[in-house]
Image (cartoon, rainbow, N blue to C red):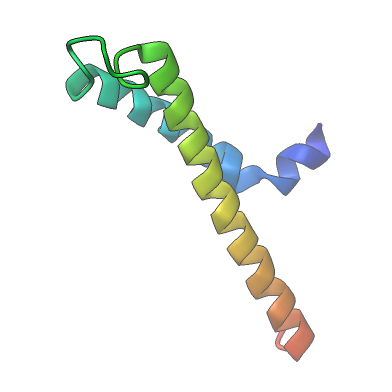
Length: 77
């Protein structure tokens, strides 16, 4: 578990703001008629926001790891 947390720390850090952003989007922008499958229900919008935050954090983590490995490869450490 500790290894997973260290490996995906940026993704997990951005997961929480994604959840909050999903809730706030549902609260202030969401679908009032109830016909929108994602934004009409706060449960699904919070999950969707958390996943978006996780994916963005995982992408940032990959970019940082690639940059570090490229610098190590060039001997710039």
